[in-house]
Image 1: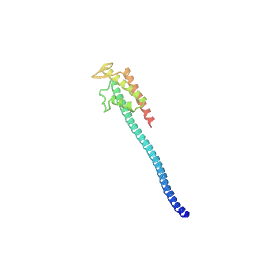
Image 2: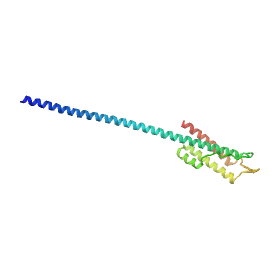
Image 3: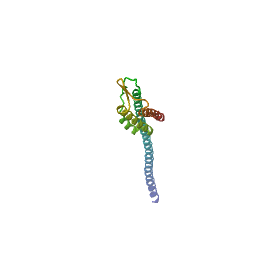
Image 4: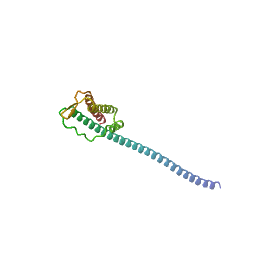
Length: 178
């Protein structure tokens, strides 16, 4: 009787071990799959973050480049106006191009520009206001239905320096972005 009892116990034990082995194998496989999926998900998330950062920097660079072009156009317009205002033989006013208002440009400068561009822009705006004040209230010459300012007027000199500085700073900023 002892032989048959041992014989029944062995198949039951081996069946139970088989079931436990299958369950353990499934659990180990699921755990390894979950870890692999977690690592893959982390890599994808990191790649998505890198792509997002690159796109954000590219958009910021595009906005900064557009701002620098607008600032350069504004500086050139001021230069043309200053040239006409200091030429006593100029009889035609300079056509004002369709430019953004300096306050809008100032807002964009505070968001996107480097500190050097911001300082140069502030100097250009101050000089521009001073020249406009001199033109309307200050020291100017009149003759034959036209007005002009002397090129040695301190406001004109300040504006000339501010324009040249703005152009130089913009060139340096654009070169630094490349």
